[in-house]
Image (cartoon, one colour):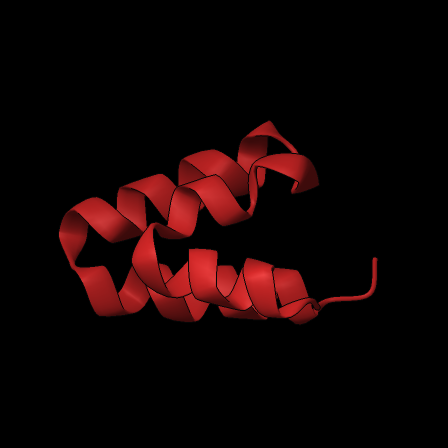
Length: 51
């Protein structure tokens, strides 16, 4: 997980997980719409996952 990805996950979570697949993007986007904090947490969890 690079510093740029972490910074992007904090500023705009859906954009940081766009390379992980469409499903991850949609989940993080919906969570970000519900609230900024759940979107950031989900993005950081997805980015931290080695798979």
